[in-house]
Amino acid sequence: MTVKAEGVSRRYFRKTGTANYFDAVQPVSLEIAPGGMTVLTGRSGSGKTTLLNMLSGLLVPTGGKVWYDDTDLYALDDRALSRLRSERTGVVPQGRSAVDTLTVLENILLPARLYQRELPVEAAVRWMEKLGIAPLRDARPAELSGGELRRMAIVRALAQAPDVLFADEPTGDLDDENTRLVLSAFRDFAHEEKKAVFMVTHENDALLYADRVLRMDHGQVTS
Image 1: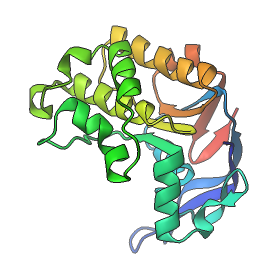
Image 2 (image 1 turned 180 degrees about the vertical axis):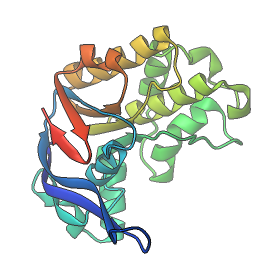
Image 3 (image 1 turned 60 degrees about the vertical axis):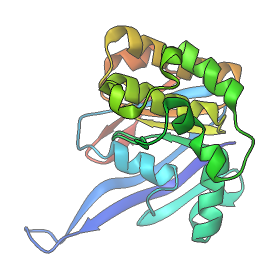
């Protein structure tokens, strides 16, 4: 699946200050194709997460359109949009996203269970092994470190085999070794499984694994 943004922008209105609006993302046009890993870098506050959220179906743009192949993403109603996101995208958010009452493996399989799909147990175990958390499959989130919780969220997204994977600062709380494991996993996912990966980061290590690097400053994207 190809994701295409056409003049996508996001403006926030406010009641205080000299201006009554703030352009978090100025009009952006880009394409995310399968088989490659795109890395978007830039300083904190430059609009990277806002753009990722619009591309992944989590935030309605103020202007422009987002296409998933021939589907106008934000022309769908809420139910159809939710279904499309669950079936075709995977998102690794910045924050904590674990259900405390479930084990690590149960957390990873939860998206498939919620939508009554076949549980990707084999894929889950394979990615857990690659990211070094296979021994933790029966542990609860409260027993995990921040880095282990992060890798669990990454495995949960990869195991669903989405057409496009969106990752927001996925290595921010990982050490060097685990950062390399995650970046290698993303690259393998894109190249070997012919999927698209769109990763937001401010860490230079990710640039070594990218097929394409974009930079964002003050809401504007450049190559």
